[in-house]
Amino acid sequence: AQTVTQSQPEMSVQEAETVTLSCTYDTSENNYYLFWYKQPPSRQMILVIRQEAYKQQNATENRFSVNFQKAAKSFSLKISDSQLGDTAMYFCAFMKHESSGAGSYQLTFGKGTKLSVIP
Amino acid sequence: DGGITQSPKYLFRKEGQNVTLSCEQNLNHDAMYWYRQDPGQGLRLIYYSQIVNDFQKGDIAEGYSVSREKKESFPLTVTSAQKNPTAFYLCASRRDITGANVLTFGAGSRLTVL
Image 1: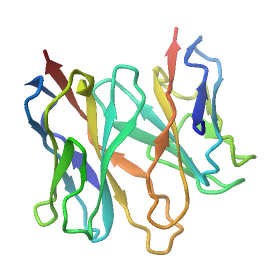
Image 2 (image 1 turned 60 degrees about the vertical axis):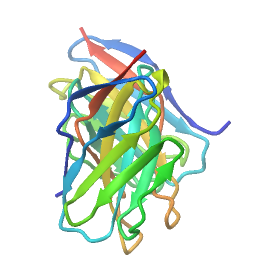
Image 3 (image 1 turned 90 degrees about the vertical axis):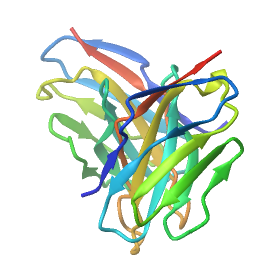
């Protein structure tokens, strides 16, 4: 079974500054996907960024980027130029790759980090 | 616009009653999922379905039941056997093509047992 650990229950950052959220995971799989989801006060889960484990290049999406360290099983999220709208719970999640194509592709989530952006 | 619709948004239930949460998607996605979220916890998988008329238990299926009679619909019934049903419930779907392994979520349903 896979586990996902987010060691920072809460964080805060000044508007326009940069913040990094940590995530580690435990798996014996070699092929998998990693995700960061954002849950604002509306509670809608929104995909922030996605990384395939076989890709060495770190994924980026505008102000969001990841630092993927496969050997260390670490997947941190960096938010640059923080904005008030970034205030949310952030969840790191793991998905096993199913080579047969018939697997569940279910997500295993960490417990989340509550990020507050301060004006 | 395509998306996932969950209803009702808020639901109150008396102890001993069954309640059904609706989840409908118009994304033409094959797989659908139900997750439960509790304060201070991540999301935990209740049930999932890869195709119509087939579904599998997740990590916390006890006290819940589902059906998948149509591709678009995946309702969740919270039965009286669920010991602590007060929670936030999220439905998600996934398109079953290689590489597109992203789950899209609905807005959620908040269930409170009185």
